[in-house]
Length: 56
Image (cartoon, rainbow, N blue to C red):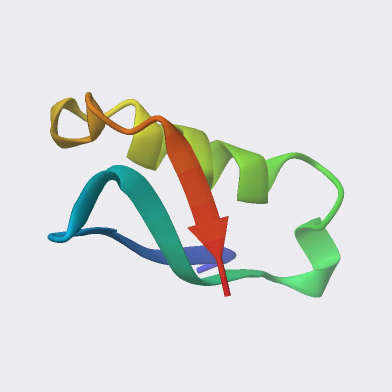
């Protein structure tokens, strides 16, 4: 495994995707994998109403 994303839509604010954790292995950083993980989450039907992203 080279990358991992933990994110969810808050029930109180379904228009926001909350990124809890994202990790990319050091050997594959700076290749767009992190962005790809977020884009994959946003392109799911369940994220249709997402208009913003928040991270901790």
